[in-house]
Length: 345
Image (cartoon, rainbow, N blue to C red; front, side, top):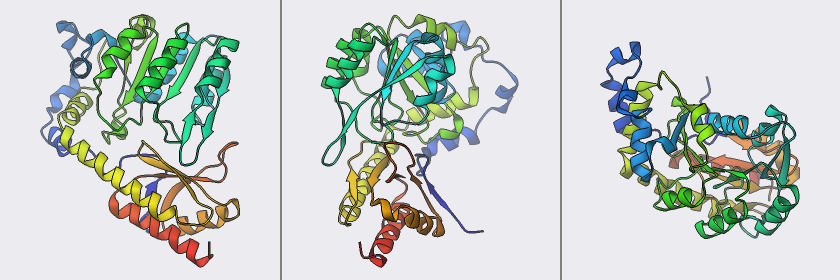
């Protein structure tokens, strides 16, 4: 069977930190038979307790979920009702466009602008739309999937000041920088804020399905909804804590990914008709000539290199390529260059 390299779902192909595997090797499997009793100490989970210390928040302001997707769904279920409006980015993960409809709500899309080498949030248009439509909730993604652009702390602070009448869901699933000191202040100053992160991307634990949310003080309804009386997955909690105990490993992986993104920028940016967008995530977005879209897809699939060929209303001549290992990235770059040279692009 031909070996395939999957770089289409934004998984971290470097894998988890070695300490995560040590936890699994030494796991006390008797824990599989028993519910946790950690609630007797006044917290919901050993993981939520640890995360609270990482960001200097009370433990009851840290929520756990079955991946970030689960927490997004629960937040919408909790706060959006029938015919109420949700603002989402126009260029975004396809699932954002499904969230409102799941509860009978309505989607409204605010724009992102395509710049010379990256996308940008158009804050003026976002705020104008917000004031006109008065949505119940606003979803912001940083870094945004699939465009890869982020929002600076100063811009985010100004934006949140304008959105105070709504629930704001800030999706940071693709944050590749560990924890920042500003999170505590951000949540203190914005009581309607739900900040969602995951162990799937940066920590390379997508298969464990662990997400978490940090919440402002007004988000108690969601806190009650996400509580699990019988606790959470005890082995997964320990693996996630092992990941948190391995910051140097993850910083080294993040550094390797940044270097490999530079290879994509420099090598594929030379090709006629290719536009490479700068990305702060573990993927890059590339606009290609529409006329080569089908042939390039066949060529890459033939080499067992599976990348995302976008087929959406606003992104229909674009590739989204997950940053893999150095070897995988070179294989993708060389394959695209080979195809381009054969077609004299």
